[in-house]
Length: 165
Figure 1 (cartoon, rainbow, N blue to C red):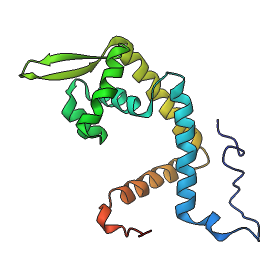
Figure 2: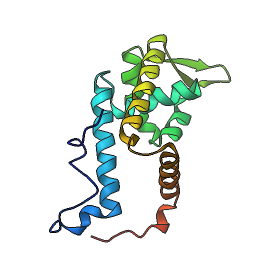
Figure 3: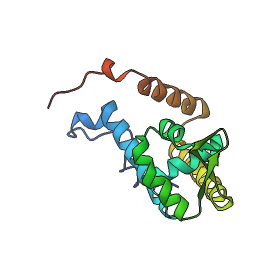
C-alpha cells in the first residue's frame, strides 16, 4: 500500500510560499508516473525481471505465440534490441523458440509453463499497484483519468510543441 510519505506528503494544498510549479499538471503527472514506476520496478525486481523482460512476458502471455518481429512491434522496441531480451528469457527457461510451421525461416516465441506462472504473478502485481495508486479516486474518476491519459498519449508527437533547449 502506498502511504502519504510515498506520495511525497502531497495533500492537495501547498504552502503559501511554495513554488507554483508544484501544482502544475505537468509536474503532478511526472511525480505520479515516477511514483508508479518506482513501485512497479521494486515489485518486479522480486521476480528478477527487468522492465523490458516484463513487457515481453506480459505481451506473449496475452497474445499467445508470436514471432519476434511482431513482438518488437507490440512492445515498441527495435527488433534488433529484442534479441538480448528474448535470449535472457530463453536462458532462464521462461520463453521458448520454435520453428514457425508457416514459415520455417521464422521462430515463434511462447511462454514456458514457468513463464506462464510468472506472467500470471506479474499481472496480479500490476493490478495491485494500480489499485494502490488509484485508491483515492472513485471508479468513475479512475476510468476518466485512464481515458484522459490515453487521449494525451494518442496525440501525434508532432502536434505537441517541442521545446528547443
